[in-house]
Image (cartoon, rainbow, N blue to C red):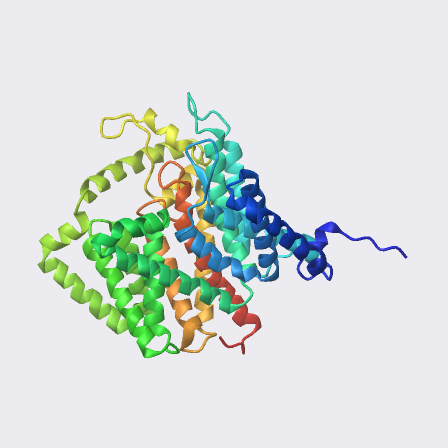
Length: 472
C-alpha cells in the first residue's frame, strides 16, 4: 500500500522525517546565506529572517512554553517594528504573541486534529468578549455622527488589541505546559526590570538604558508587575536563599523609591502598584496591613500639605478636572449605542461635537472602563469584568492547593495582587487595553505582560487541580 507524506506534518518536530529533511535544509541555507549577510545583501537578510521564523516556530512547537520568556524579552528590549503605512506599527511583542497564537492553532489542527479548549471558567467570558468586540467593530462602520470616524486601519488596530490580549491569556493557559517556563519568564522580567530601575536611578546611565529598553518601561503595568512580583518573591518564596531574598528586598525598595520619590506626581504609576502590595500583605498578615494603613492615614491627615502634593502634585489637579469633564461628554456619546459601543477607536473622532473646557477637540477618556464601554459597549464591559472575576477566582482556589513556600506559592499571591492592581490601574488610563489614539499600539508591550501573568495564574490553578501532588 502506497503511503503519502503530508508536507505540513513534516514541520512538526515530532515527525520521524523532520530531522532528516528540515534540519539539513536549514543548515544548508545558513551556509549559503552567511557570506551574503556579511556583504549586506538585502535578499539574504530576508531569507535569514525567514529561517529565523521557521526555527522559532520549530522550537515553539517542540517546547511551547519557551515562548513566554521570549515574549517578556521581546516586550522589554527587542526594538523590532513593522510599519503598517499608518501612524502605528506592529511591535516585536505583538509579533511574538501572534506567532504563539498561530502555532497553537496550527498544533491543534495538524497534531491534535481538533480544536479543544481546556475546562476553565475564564474561557467562556473570554470568547464572549472577543465576539462582542467583533460585533462592535461591525457597528463601528455605521455613520453614528456626521463626518469621518476612525480609519479602517485604526479600527482594525483597536480590534486587534482587544483580540490579541485576550487570546494571549488563553494561549498562556493552554501552552504553559511546565512551571519552569513560568519561572524563567518571571525571573527574566524581574532581572531586566530591576536592571532598568537601578540604572534609571543613576542619572549618567539613563540615556543608555532608555535607548536599550523599549516603551514598556514607561507604562503603569510594567511598574505594577515589576513591584508586585519582586516583592512577592522576596516576601513569600521561602525556598530562595537568604541572600537572594535580601537582594530582591533591596530591589523592591529601589522600585518604591523610584515610584514614590522620582515619579511622585505619576499617580498611575505608584497607586496601582501600592494597591497590589497592600492586598498581598492584607491577605497574608491582615493585622499588619490594617496597622500600616491606619498609621499612613493618620500621617496624611496630619501632613495635609504632603498629602495634597502626593495626590494633586504636578498637573494631577488639572488632569482630574479635565477627566471628569471628558467622562461627562463620553457618557453622552455612549448613549448613542450603549450595548455594543461605537466600535474600536471611533469615539475619538466624535468628541469634537461637544465642547470640553470651552474647546472642541478630540480627546480620550484616560480610563479603561469608559474606553471599553465607548468602544465595545456595556456588554463588552460586563464580559471584561467577568473575565477578571474568573481569573481572580482561579487564583483564590490555587491558594488552598499549594504549600506555604516556594516560587509557586509566592507567584499566586503576587498575581492576585497584580489583578487587584490592574483593576485600579484601569481607573487611571488605558493601561490594560491600550487605546489606539493614546497609549497606542506600543502600549501592547506592557499590557501583554499583565495578560500573560493573569493567564499563568489560571494555569497554576488548573495544574494543581489535575496534578495536586506535583511539586515545583
